[in-house]
Length: 264
Image 1 (spheres, rainbow, N blue to C red):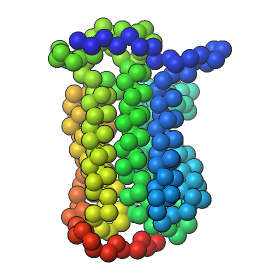
Image 2 (tube, rainbow, N blue to C red):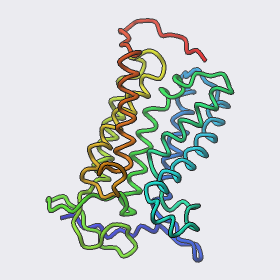
Image 3 (tube, one colour):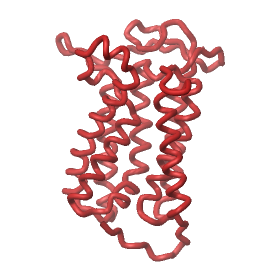
């Protein structure tokens, strides 16, 4: 067994405790923004102004939807504690991704830029940011797995941890970190290999939906519909949409084939 006695609290300022989770989430957002800016520097057909403006819109909409899905997932608790609905103590990664995507899509319509092109540019950075965010979950003790007695099961022992103290559980957060890094590498290899624009983003969504559908069978959570977690239900919907769109629209680009100019 692996014992995790790391304090989830990085430091305190007066009565305010700053947790590693918040730091890693902030670092994940920064990573994604820097990825977008680096892509522009490397030749992406977008302006720095568009990227920065989209980042602001995406962060705001992502946080709102992330919190919204978390509240829906724990609806009974928040109905008993309505004063805690507004807060950042619980966030949903699906809400962050889909909320940010919706915000950037609306932004792209107003700025007359291709959302598909933008989404493809961001796709590898998104999954990399998710891997960084899961480091925060690992230290925080949240998003843990069901009880397990495998040699690599994790036992949380720090009293500030959100994990179940003294009970060996599946380290689902490190599982996802490894998976996300593998997908990051795959997306890098697949860049500019599919048309039309937006295909790489659909591939990213498919990879992550397959993962969440499977991993949640060994991850603690609340039943949402038909005995499945909220993330699993969302994953099924996402898979239906992405697989259908890819089957109807996506095509492989042969090496040397001239790239299409992104259109609004």
